[in-house]
Amino acid sequence: MSDLLSSPFFGIALTLLCYWAGTVIQKKTGLILCNAVLLAAIFTGAVLMIFHIPYETYQKGGDLINLLLAPATACLAVPIYSRRELLKKDWLPILVGCTAGALTSLLSVYALCRLFGLDRQLTMSLLPKSVTTPIAVAISSGHGGIPSITVAAVVITGISGNLMAPSLIRLFRVRDPLAAGLGIGACSHAMGTARALEIGETEGAMSGLALGLCGVITVIAAIFF
Image 1 (tube, rainbow, N blue to C red):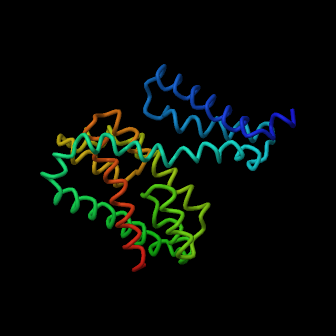
Image 2: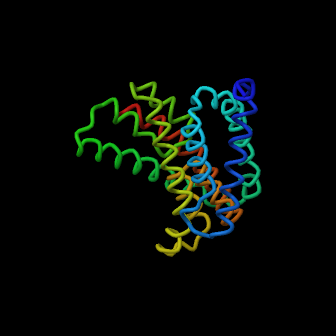
C-alpha cells in the first residue's frame, strides 16, 4: 500500500477518478452547484482526510498534472486564431474592456481589504485573485504575499466564475458573445474560460484572450499597490 501511495500515479489516478465522478453527478443532476471541478476538489480532499494521506504524497502526482497547464493554456490560442478577424475589427473595445476588468478586480479587492483592516501581506495575497495561478503566485510572492492564500483565492474565484457565468450572462442580458467572453476571462481566468468554451467558440476565444491580457495588465498595475 505504501508503494502505491508513494507513486506519482496515485495522485493522477485519484484526480481523474474524482473528476470523473464529478462529471457523472453533474450530468445526472444538472444542478449549477454540482460542478465537476468543484466536486472533484471536494472528493479529493475528502479522500485525503478520511485515509489520513499527507498532501505531499498526493502532490507527487499533482505536480505532473500541473505540467499540463502550460500546454493546455497554449491550446487556447486555437479558438483565438479562428476569430482573428474579429480581433482586428474590435481590438480597441477588447483592450479597453480587459483593462477595465483587470483594474476593477484590483481596486475592489484593495478597497475591501482596507475596509476590513487586512494587513499588506494578506492584501497582496488576495489582490491577484482574478488572474491565472502562475501569474497570481508570481505577483503575490514578489510583493510579500502568501502564495498558498493566493492559490486558494484564485481557485475559489475560478470555480465561482465557472459556476455563475451562464446565469450572470442571462441575468444581465449580455447578448454579444465578445462581451460575454471578455467578461468571463477577465473575472475568472482559466476555469471560467473552460465554461466559456462550453457556451460558444467566440466566447471561449475572447475569454482566453482576456485571460492573457488581464494577466499582463495586472502584473503592471500591481506595481502601484
